[in-house]
Image (cartoon, rainbow, N blue to C red; front, side, top):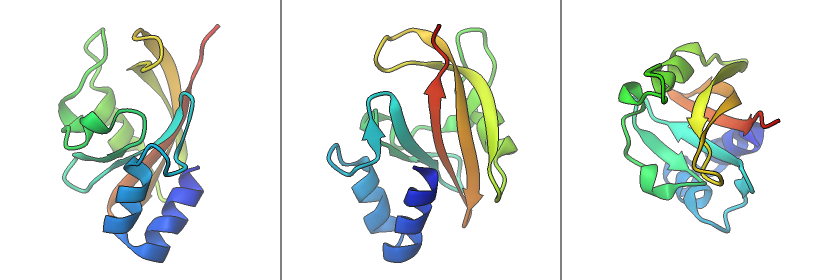
Length: 119
C-alpha cells in the first residue's frame, strides 16, 4: 500500500494524491490497514482511517504510557523503508494495541502503513 501511495504521489502530485488517499473510497483503507502520510513539518497530511487527524502534529503525540510514538515513526523512516513497532489506538477497538508500520521517507514526507498485532 505504501508503494502504491508513493507511485500515485509521483504520478499526479501531492495535492491530488493526498486528496485521493484521504477519501473513504480512495482505495487506501482496508479495515484496519490504511495509509498515513506525515509532511515535512511533522503534521499529518493523510490519514485514511481517521481523516479528522489531518493536521495533527505527530511529533507531539504519545501512546498510553507516554512514549512519543509519532516522533519515533518519523525519526526511523528511511528511503528504503523500515518496520517500526509501537503502541497506537486501534480505530476499530478504541484500545491501545501493539502495531507495526512500514515507514518510508520519500520527497520529504513519511508514508506509513501498518497492522495491529492482536492476539
